[in-house]
Length: 398
Picture 1 (cartoon, one colour):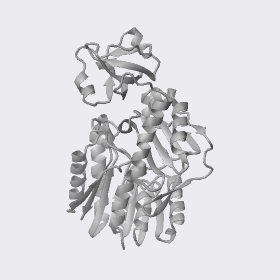
Picture 2 (cartoon, one colour):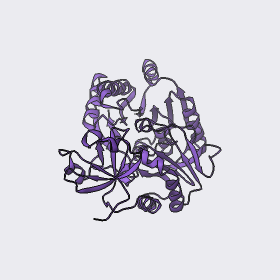
Picture 3 (cartoon, one colour):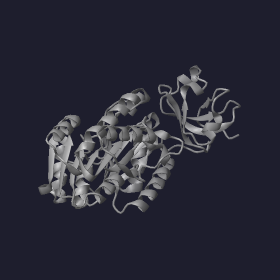
Picture 4 (tube, helix red, strand yellow):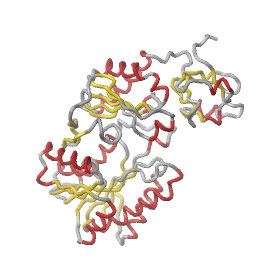
C-alpha cells in the first residue's frame, strides 16, 4: 500500500461504512474512533478514512470541533488536496454553469453537490463571493481564491464570513477581500428581464439569492396585466421579475430599509419604477392592514426567511407557514394566484404543502396547486443530503 502524507481516522466497528460507500458525504463524531490523537488534529486537516476493518474508504476533511467530524473530499485515497485538485473541481462546476447560463451571474459552487464540501461561491460578473463554511476550506482559502481566478478570470474575490454554518464549525465571522477590490456600489445583476442590485458587502448571504431564479420566472408568467404583491420581498426578487413580465403594478413589502432601497434602485435600473412601490414593515402587520382595507391582488407571493432552521423549530415553523398562507389568501382576487415559499431545511415538501393548504382553507379559500418549484440548476441537489433540497415554492390558483 502506498504511503500517504495524511493521518488516518477510523470508523467504529459498528460505524455506517456502507452509507459512506454508497455516497453519503458526512461522518458524525459518534461514528468515529475519537482517541487522543484524533482529537488533536487541527480543524480542517485532511485525513484518510478507514472502516472498522482498516480498509481505506476516502480522503476526508476533519474537524474535531464539529458535529460533522469528517466531510468526504475524494473517494481516491491517493489524491492530493491542493491547488490542482481545487482547480479541477472549479473547472467542473464552471462547465455546468456555462451550459446553463449565457451571462456569468449564478451560483458557481454549491458545496457537497459540486464536490467542495461546505463551500459556496456565487459569481457576479467579474466578482466572486466565497463562503468557506467548513474548516478545511478556511485553511486552503488562499489556494481556493487563486484557483478561482485561474479558472474563471474574475478580478475580485471576496470572502463572506457571515452565517450560522461557520459558527457550527468553530470559525470566525471576519469577512475579507482576497483578490482585487470590494465593488464601490451595488452590482447590477440581470435576471429574468429585470436588473437586480446586489450589495456584496452588506447584503444578506453573498448579496443576492440566485436560488429563486426559476420561481421568479414562473411567477412572471402569471403576472402579465396583474396587480402583484411581493411579501418578504428582500431586493424585489418576485416583484421586479413580475414587472418585467408585464405586471401593471407591484408592491414590495419587507422589514429591511436597505433591502427595499436596493429594490427601488433595481426598479429604476429596469425602467419600471413608475409601476413599483415599496412598504416597510412587519410582513404579518402589513398583510393584516391590507386585508382590513379590502385590498386585492391578482398575484400574491410570500417568500419568508427560514421559519424552521432546525428540527427543534419545526412545529413553530409550520405554524408560521400556515399563518402566512391564512393571511395572504384573502388578498388574492378570485381566479388569482398565490405563491408560497419555504427555504427551511427542516420542513420537507409534504409538510410545507400541508401547512399551506391548511392556512388557505382556514382563510375560507379553495385552491388548485398548479406548480411546485425548487432551486435552480446552479444549486444542484446532493442525492444523499435532504438539506440541499431546502427550497420549495408552491403556486396555487384560488
